[in-house]
Image: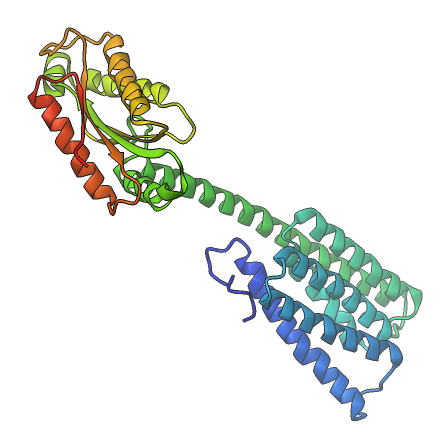
Length: 360
């Protein structure tokens, strides 16, 4: 199949690409065979028939090559549909005396709806094709019919078949689009659940590794310094024991909101890494700026005014470890987290409600 590497089931245009490949491959074989039969004299080589068959072969090969080279699927589908419509209708007029040729346009509605993936355009094309065939029958250019009853019967048959196909395909396209929209919405929700903490809405530990590794890969291209702040709630277990876990969850949500307000620049990323542990990946112009932002966070947490039943202060506080990533140093996300974690625990050992620099 020629698709430019896009024939995977997860591709939104998978069905149309497969259909285009099948139609154009069949077109190459059919138009090529008809031309050969006319060249060797089995079929009558009329100018109109030669033109349609030669043009069909050129378009089929052009679409195949275009898809292989990355041609827009929408453009390929529109070109294929346009020639399908004109080719089937033109063939009916040029070979109108052959009743079998008159049956070929009956395949049009299904292919039109699938190619265009649009209900209104599919209906418009079907109505135009139906009108063209009925005009052909009633004009006397079609197959020889014995009487007006046979003409009416043929016109009604073509009309009913085309309309029925259009109705079925419109229903299919409508529900297919609804299903795809629902699947995309579910996919977005699953991605959100996989990358975010359900309680606070912050990024989770899985995303933390991805973000930090991404920032490490491009840190040498940024004149600022990359920083990671790790902190957790002082004596959170005592808070839960005193006020209950639902109140503890509310505290964590308030803490997430407070942290997001302090680190509110678009590139700052705040994480809930587990339990009462949080982290922030951010950039700083100077070490002093990073220290100031950390001080602001600790002050903002205490300003929340949540009572701390076991201290170290009257209001809930946090302890933190701050790691500044040196330029050009060989490091990774796990090493940075470990260094910040060591600084966090040193801060707890010397009294809590404070932060310390992590060792390089």
